Length: 468
Ligand code: FAD
Image (tube, rainbow, N blue to C red; front, side, top):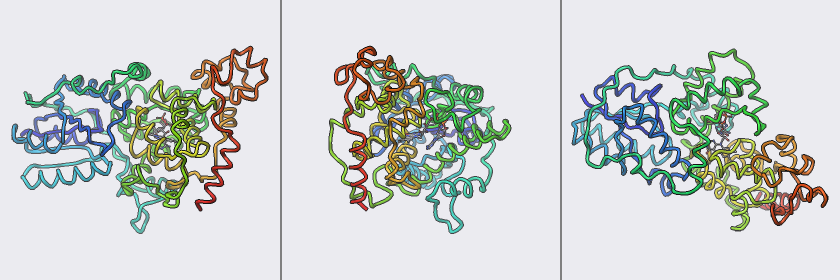
């Protein structure tokens, strides 16, 4: 018989449980549907569209250029394909964005009503959100018990599956089929090519990235992951987001190494990803509403100039600007920097975390609804198990501690490259002659700070006290 495998955030052939089941069931129609309204009112961000273009190319190549690409409402497209081909089944891996949960449940029941087999699988999480709960069945709200008691005590994640041995593709000449280029995912902006030049896309690249990380990053991960100039983070996040690699594959590959504190810590970061998905699944309004409702009364400022300076890496606070420019230039930002720039936006600029979340959504190649919204709520202090609001990162100390020799900061702020380390994170304190010999003119080739760090911190704390 003929069956449809509906590719979504599982753009790979190996360890793809829905695809493997489809192959066992018959000839497969490999389908990808771009649904522009997939993210509710919000479109895919620019950087993820960019990534998707290349990821689909890689997937199509591994399917001998036989990926069927369409655009529109997946339910409508799947139903018309069934009409056209007489397909007897539809297989997919589950997604957890609230509107997709709803869409998929409806699709499944409609298909079954019409006598078509509809099967969904877990292709992107180590544990399903409903598999991990407190003994009374309620979801965990704190990470450590979620991970140590919930996840690690639950069933061991399944063994990854090989690439299906028998992938027979059903040939098709469907009306409405598009080429990848016709999806127009590549934005015609100068940043597009620049961002892509920093990455390799697709399943093979994801596997290569994993093994390169095992070679040069995993040892000393626990400490090294805090230093943005080092290579101790895996940079697997966009590959994971698009499902070019599964967390099972990573989890199991770690098992071939001797268990160390670095491996334990790396596993726990994958655990944070699971935690974000569990939060989103159990709180569908996570991307929009404060988990802690007290924050609904927080007096956020409305100040486009501040926001714009932050977005463009022109705040006059070097470590913040370096992070924001890394994001703009590469589509990625090191986790330490995400925390620093997030804290600065919310607690020094007093701007709503949702503005930061939206900018990240548009600029990150790994923009992920669960991880992004859970992390922004965490940094703003209104999320689950969040950093308390009163803990405010000091961007000068953060720079001095985590980029002591300034390698990272100088890479993204070439205008400050000749400033000595002592003043790199606070150029406004540098004596005139030092600024002059480093060719820095504050207010001209590098901005003066847009806020006073101490004063703005105090204001934030006052606002927080009032809110309480
Ligand atoms: P590694 O350190 O190598 O970690 C391996 C994997 O574990 C990551 O690829 C990721 O899947 C997962 N992971 C690591 N840290 C976290 C975390 N804190 N929360 C959830 N999962 C984690 N991550 C995204 O994937 N998409 C986002 O949109 C996103 N937005 C963020 C926004 C803010 C404000 C903050 C503070 C963090 C955000 N993160 C997001 C989490 C984290 O910064 C990235 O996952 C990480 O930097 C990706 O780099 P890596 O793959 O080298 O990480």
